[in-house]
Length: 139
Image 1 (cartoon, rainbow, N blue to C red):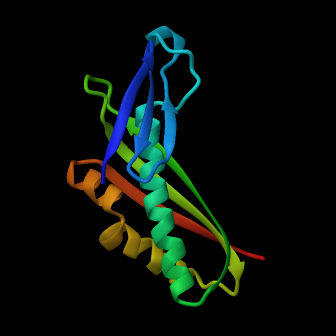
Image 2: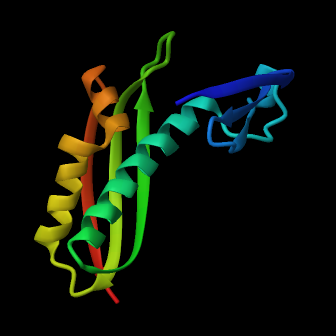
């Protein structure tokens, strides 16, 4: 994998991945930004949430479950020091479908957390306390 991050102005950067996708990163005005892009630490949250969501959806689909939707809400806390690293992160999966069993969704979330989600496992190894829960909605 590769990425290129280009400084634009102030504290605004454009990051482009090797697959050709780009995103704007910027800071708040009190740090010299114009607040027109995500913060880099927000991108880490998206990365963990996206990685784990990918796993959960893939596992449920592979099990031939009638999955309709998956929304993952990620919350995090950072230490009050420099560097202001994440200390805790929580992923709440809201999974909707027809006939989904709690045990099946729980298994998918657990497999992602313990085996497949490289982003979460990497942060966990670095000392971030990562927790998960889920809610199943019948549609």
